[in-house]
Length: 301
Image (cartoon, rainbow, N blue to C red; front, side, top):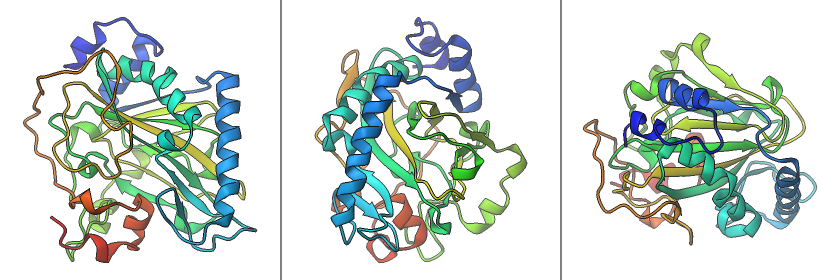
């Protein structure tokens, strides 16, 4: 569906101005959107998983842990596939978040994946400039991610930053010079990004961020000793069909969460880079950007 067609449908959660901002700039932030009771439940369950991670000694199917992780000092970088880990996360993804998604995808909305990323007081927690769609190409670019801050977020704890209008710009090569998947722009392309134009999306716990799959984004390292969790849910319009292996499928992958299944795909003529063959498994963007899984992805095409 075109933006004009989507905007012709009544808004469910977002204002019309917020929807228009998303389509024009490739992103939008909304402060304090999540109801207090819902937010408190998400935080409670998240705290339980952080405690569970204390017993983990290496990254696996549930937890991606960072250097220095221990039972005394958990350094949990990601809770993988929260939609499969606890019903609270899935209820959230199919509740208010699915209504937000319908405001931008149109009446037919498909769930793609979820993840819960953490920021810690550690230089290694920087997420470099990248675009999402090269991880999971679709027939068109009506694919986006909605992030929910589970803690107050400002410049001290690594907010999400977007380059306005970049969703209408080029897609970048996210392989390194050796042909291994890096999941980010190379140093030369990153250096060319006009940092003065970056918009840092901040707000109290319960605020949301939404960015298009083509939008350039990153997040700086946290300077706070307290972890900053960001719950991410990715959706697509019903007519955007994936054509490569899903990086980390769950029991809910490609489930229709609003409207109905669409039998005709819409095709955007702009090309998309193909990622490695994820059918053999995927770690995380942290591992890719730090080079931890370089051997795993080199030459996987």
